[in-house]
Image (spheres, rainbow, N blue to C red):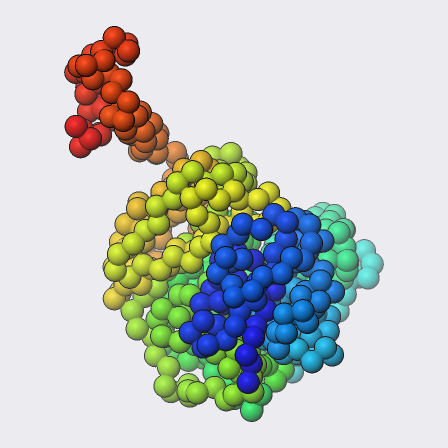
Length: 505
């Protein structure tokens, strides 16, 4: 039995894994960089080990340092979370060679499904519907011209080893083919050390829908239904929900069956996702498999009642999945919004720095997976996502209303966040209708990027409330000490009234 797990990650996902460890009676081990000495995941763990300087390339991405920490702590398993080394076949293999259980699929599966070309070949062989395109690398300009013409414009040039929108180019005209291929190759080489690219038919206005899957070492596999992930900015997900607003029982059954087929085709062990593109006619195509836990896994947990991290640990420990497909059902509706330390009105520039105060949303149906706290300084070295706000409702309308309330209640001072941007998404007519696709943000950009007057009003209220609290504490501005202030008590009251803080009097 697994008794001690080292979490090879940081932030909210490290904390999330530790919650399940605590419930299961498993000792948790944190690793941390110089920048993360005071991070919340370090405080929560039963043990913590330093693994290097602040830069992830010198700490969280150094396999030797992670393995050394595991050996020092006596951990018998490693959970990689997502990002960093979670889809690194070398890391998975190294854990196996060191006698440490890697909580995830084998290195062979990671390698096959991590390479988009080999994944396409595997899925075609398994009978899974894939986007029309090539199964080989584009080796020359002539090869690129020939292949693109065979597939038919428009096409996407995609890095075989890519992810996160890198190494991708949309090509609509013949003149764009050669420059597009060269740009994709260059970006792929710089980002992944591999310039292999291939061609896929471009699906216009697609919906991005992924199916949560779970497989064990006994040949069992199930899906835990779909997640709608079409609210994206630069190919990065911003808001996710389940069930998908476009899903029908028939489509769900067909896509779920294909997701399980894909899972069994590679003897997948662990939690992962099979991602699809769905067009307006509800034709669906395999996009890729993510061989790890996804950022948006909590909404699946909310509607199924399944702890996916616990399930990961149990199947990694050799246990069978404790339920069958027919046992699984969706209850209600869940939405997740990713909260970033960034300024939407300055081209989404990251906003690291000191969090002066934080007020987390509370109340029925609200879950907050985060790692920051008042007095914590967000480092510049990592992804700016600071938390995930998850809500559950009996139906989609209730979930949207609940997310609006939760975002309104979520207050952070000292840094910029995208909370107002997320609120605008919830208020969007297109989002409310539910038929949106991956062009949602581009289509609604004017509405989403309109900085509301309420934002400046709230800031004024905060300033006024802070100053009035100072007055109350020091006596400045009161009848007994009017000479110390430049205005009368009534004038201060009028100022407060204009800012909506009369409740302080």
